Image (cartoon, rainbow, N blue to C red; front, side):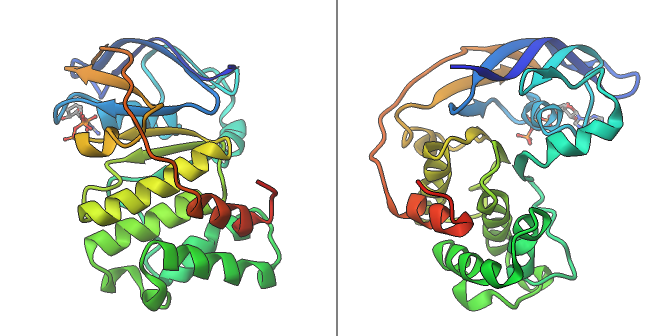
Length: 246
Ligand SMILES: Nc1ncnc2c1ncn2[C@@H]1O[C@H](COP(=O)(O)OP(=O)(O)OP(=O)(O)O)[C@@H](O)[C@H]1O
């Protein structure tokens, strides 16, 4: 398979501090499912920030979709970012928009007709258990509810790459399984998935996933593999959301 994400000898330091990521090299295949693990402070969030282009590395080569994004002119970066769905550790919902309108954002940005947006957004909110909270503003939602809105927003536009930072950190195991079903469905539709998590039971649910492990800013233990039972419902849901055939 084609490499969609390539890191070559990447290093990252914040200011004058020591490097928080050192000599990171890996290549992820388009359509792959990857988990990133490691102790708190190992550098997972920093690595994901490089991936969704909110941070430039201090050294090394980073290619997305086959293009070097480190040397790229900043005018071109938004076009790349639009192809990446992100679930941030701190959610980053738009505070003055309802849950419904937060989830609708990627479809609106993609220029979808307004009358075609409502149905898929409602269906997606129902899937993440928030059908009754569509009109709520983020400040009136619990942490777990905000996290579910953030996930719904990240997946509804079927991005080429989905990056998620501890996406099930605030929900119970049943909901975590349901959310993982969404990621798995998105993956089956072709999206490359990269999830940073400490949640080992979650990782064990995706049989074909590969694991990357960070230890004090260095990548170790590049692959692993566990079993997974397939599910169909979220795939159909995502198919309906954008009207693309499965
Ligand atoms: N903006 C920043 N400025 C300075 N240092 C930072 C910044 N962000 C992270 N760091 C440092 O970089 C190191 C890696 O942090 P990072 O958040 O990437 O780890 P993590 O593996 O995601 O941790 P956690 O699991 O606790 O979220 C830590 O030592 C952290 O203190």
